[in-house]
Image 1 (cartoon, helix red, strand yellow):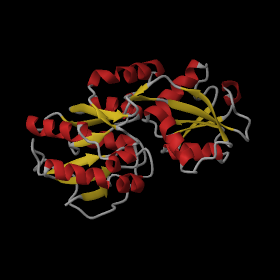
Image 2 (cartoon, rainbow, N blue to C red; image 1 turned 45 degrees about the vertical axis):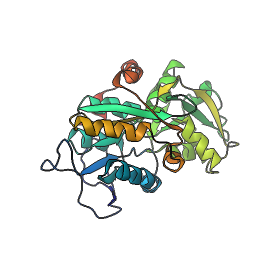
Image 3 (tube, rainbow, N blue to C red; image 1 turned 60 degrees about the vertical axis):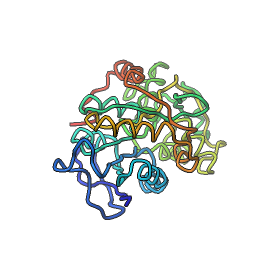
Length: 297
């Protein structure tokens, strides 16, 4: 049986609020957290509405259940820090992190990245800075003194790389603009469109999907800048899982070609990745002098 839930009660440096979508037994406890558990807890990144993330990935859960012969529990929290904490406490068997949240989680957990989204032959993507047309924000100089919206503070493409892009244009948070954090990429785009923020940073693929879905009117927002390439979101697994199970998990993702399962990831497939592929994230964090304590306690 596939059990699906959003987990409650994970403490973090941010306010955490979550809802249980379906009754089930909860994450693996220490009593059953073995190298080859009968149930795998699979965490999905909360970069959009959590209920939508769960619904969209029911196909993935079914694929893993059928391929691995195990019960699958989908797990979503409302912020990145609580997901990092869940990994550090050994509650997650598989987890789909953002690049920055993976790097942060890796400092506290034994995780192996093994696959990442593949799109049009590439395992990279970009973030963008968008501006409000009504506010007349269409270049870097217009951002001075304005409110800039970001997603989660631990988001790669809705915080880290947009902030780095702004810093490279001599615009620093707290000095040249006021930063606000809204949680999801969709919330950032809507805030700029509706005039609640004059600029914002988010993933280009997510922005394009919001435009395609009709949620964002491209006549109301403008793309000011695009970041350097970012390594795609990694799938990770606990390092202490049974080696044979780890290989089965890799194969289940790398051989996946079901469009219905890949659709929510807007992917053509998944490609093999390893830890060193995320060194550019570490470099960006060093440049911005990000404090790990900002994300986790």
